[in-house]
Image 1: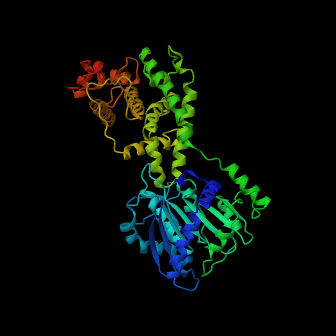
Image 2: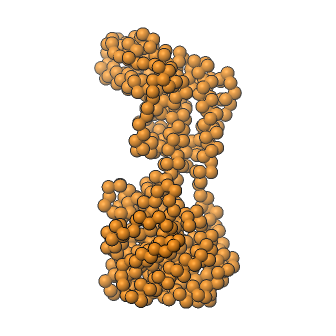
Image 3: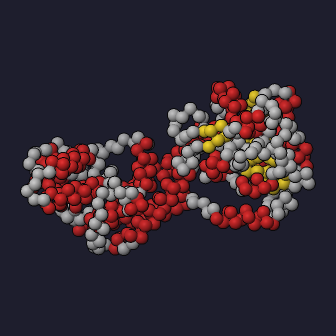
Length: 519
């Protein structure tokens, strides 16, 4: 059962009719009767059950520290806390229910060695505080789920909330929230002050009615229980449960006013789904790749073609501005959405979007740079995004790709004519090098060691990229800004170098063609 694809009522219906609730509660009852503490594993034909048992929650007992929540730092991978991966860029920390977290740490060494090899669907369950511990172990396991693997399913009974509003916010943007089904008696489930629910709740009352909802605010309204030392007998609740009463409209638990507020919140929270539009974005990229290709016919290159607003000889540039705007809007949303997700979800996102996002950045950022310098601005890389400089979403996409540690390999026999320059900020560097030369011309006769040093540094930067075959051959087109820079630079450069020799001897004309050799 892959619960990650199920939401709300669908998850509730499936689990309610599957017999998993009864199976889970039967095993919980067995452990409770034996008065054992810790966890027990049941290997069955179809499922592996992991059942947690914990002492009752008491205001006056050893678990009174519930009022002092445990902080979780992050999102640095080296952080000692086992839940750092649930932090997000926008919400880098949260707090956990201390009694549950203490028991989690107590059971973790044995849990690691005994359990992780199971290949069957895993059901993690518990009641009361044991359910809270089960929730933490389920969250902890989510980091270990590999592509294609089934997510664990957590079923709890009458369990206190385990995390604060910040954890709930992170999980609200995560695939993992659909891994949890919490069965709760509206009048008896203990409420932990300062903590918030996440996941799906199957809420029941003593009138044999139940409702299955995800909305955390509605869950808080429906649960009226107080802290208690005892866990109610959910066997009786399951026995009388009316399986047909799961929808909001049909349940006597839900008032019309509550349903209305839930619908209003749902309408406001329009969830961005990057996967749905990814293919559309690839089509727009294909158009722009064609625009890049036909721009070579005018010997400008697509950067200068766009910067100077020169119509191409083909129709491919008709909607370049609109395509760029749509692609920027999409990828900005992808990155902003990723910032809200736990680190574990970002790794999934990066696998799906790594190369598409990298190609987008290398294709579109040069056009943004062209627009920036067309408006007579300077210092693109040093200017804040608010003032029109480099957008943070480009920085994030570049970081994702860099962290993947993908080593590029460009064999000598590969034609580079369609290559997108690896450094998407290359043209900003060209523009700044042109600015330096223009400033030197303005002060003719003056030798500026700082300016010369900047130009030499730029020359070394270009030569390194040429040597690695990481720059597009179109930079050498006759009318490109780079060649404009070179023609001016060679007039003031008085020291020979590998780069100046490469340019002066015309070797650049064969760069990027099969069997090209820089030597």
